[in-house]
Length: 384
View 1: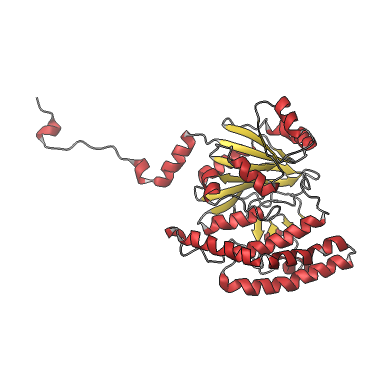
View 2: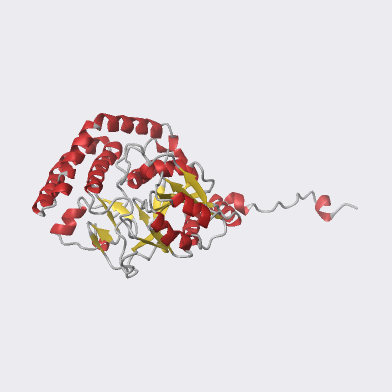
């Protein structure tokens, strides 16, 4: 006998493919089904004492699909051997020389197979559930390439850490600042920046979390930088590729700082000024580049004078040395700028974004230092 449906010539009702109708929902569902693998990379150079202090707590991270890699920049203090003997489950990548932050992490990433890469300094103490909040963030925000946790000071845990605080920002002249830290002034953490997973301009290199596929597509950290500003440059590149950067305030880490270069080391000042200028040469839109660099000459000269007045001569002379190095290398940076622009324009979705200033993440003051020192705006939440 034929069924009633057949006699009435009715077609069977097809199940509604809700997942196909909602791509964003589909992405979240698949993300939840598949627990993404995370590779945590700890770069080390003669930091055995720091590894002994911070690595055990890191290995107690509460996340089931994670592996840990210690990338050793040719240490001479027995760091690699100690990790091998004490924690055989940790993969040790022994590099043949000291490649610095950029080169060491780029090479270590070749040994990582995680969907998410976390570049963690060897002087960072983590909260046990920090990684869960990071991966949840990547699930919620498929438009985000990189993230950072909230970073507090290891020496004063009630205060934000200098290196990243509650997320990195930048002013129109290219000077970086953070929610919770302007210049050398760090705020007490009262939860004032915990209200949302806000969009930021850059994520701290001390705890840099990034989608592996995007990191590789962007060619990783620019090894010409060596130390400092490399994470800001990379985040700027991500944004020019159409991605966003965020902070996950529920993920908490504590940073000691000064492990690679002491805060008083004149080389830190040299790299900060030289690399900041190089970053601008690579990324600021063409119409704004010359005016920005001219204003920077004046303001950085004032910084040089202030350091001389403070009788910090070694640090002071790092500023003109940085300028000399930058302008000697300017043809190289402009060449890199052109290559980057051509690469971005080859991508259809980015052809209208590749030469934008991209300083659109708010707040975006003209000069963070003018606001801080002249207008006396001491906290990050009142910047415009």
